[in-house]
Length: 172
Image (cartoon, rainbow, N blue to C red):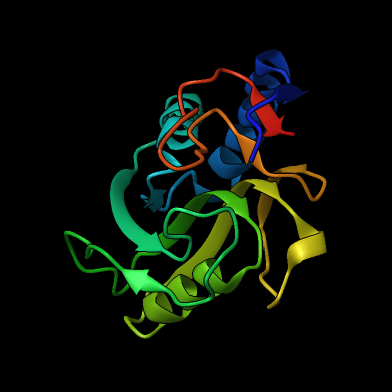
């Protein structure tokens, strides 16, 4: 893969969209003390900005899942690489994802969560790539729909590189 980077979404657009998502989350979860669960590693920058903008009482946790290995295509096999730190039963849970691509990883995790009997489960995704969807996933809070390109930046990586880019870029 060549490493020519092209900006797809500028940092200012990302900041505006994160603020908009945070307002919707603040409105919907104002008195619910939600548990936000970030899917590592890609969601960590987005989730940090989202939590700061949301400005309501909440708790955070993280989980590591993998379906990519070191490539640019999902293997379709989901691996749970870590567990949650506490129970989700009876909690209002908001899953925070960097990108919904095939939907397989997110669908797997939401099914895993629902078996633990939370009060509610919703999904917030910075980006989605519907052209690659293999299973339906309901996104309650969505930032951007992106074309079928391999994107990096703002936490999203390629083989652990490019997470630090402030913009969302695609690789030629």
